Amino acid sequence: MTEKRLSHAYMLLAPEGPARDEAARRLAAALLCPAAEPPCGICRDCRKALTGVHPDVIHVGRERSDKDLRREILVGQVRAMTADAVLAPNEAARKVYIIDEADRMNDRAQNALLKALEDPPGHACFILCAASADALLPTVRSRCVRTGEETLRRDGAPALTDLARAYLEAAASGDMTQVALCCMSRAKLSREETEAFAREVKAAVCDILCGRLEDPGLDRERLFRLDALMDKTQDYLRHNVQPKQIFGLLAVETLR
Ligand SMILES: [Zn+2]
Image (cartoon, rainbow, N blue to C red; front, side):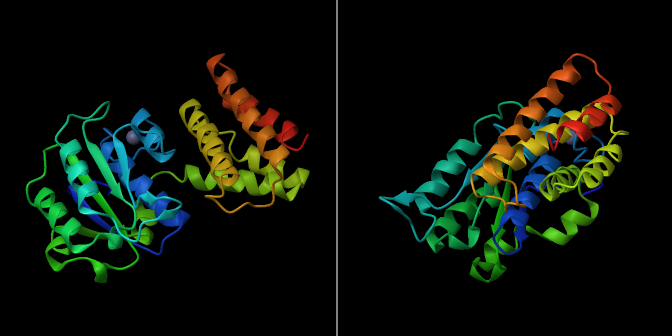
């Protein structure tokens, strides 16, 4: 991922869960990032893709019928996706389709996807997330670059997600020293990185509240306070307060 030699189809093989979701977001960021060494982690496309709000990153997954999730991803969904893939991107140079649980596509759906993989619209990329490649047709498999979460973690984006997570864990510990050390080690972040850090923390808070991310031991009230604190951080950045001062403030305010 350190050079701009990107394929238009990836198979992300990892057990289902937040780590795989995050790996998919990083890969999507890498595909959309205009930097020479994507993902830079700080440009608009990276930040939006990493926090899951990029309009050109589209998720396709099992649909609900009544209350339950359907057992499979249906051919109609894949056709709708490939029809959408023909349309130009909204903001980025590409459009990324993340197929969550690609191993849930039935054969008809996979064959419909195959057409798009064989002759993709120039700007469309596909990320097929699956626990293993076994449930995918050999023809689909052969069209995809295989990748796993370890590869992505090793040469992926700056570990902003990890920084945000460590901060939340420090906050959950309730230990003033741990929080202070954590904040001080971030005081060297640039303005852009601090902005991205605040976004990451907000995204993680949201994920924890929605049950998408494991709760490190923060109650709801604390989570809302941290969210508000990150709003404040973004506000300070807009008013040209330096990251060093902001993290100094966070060291004091986080446990208050
Ligand atoms: Zn970027």
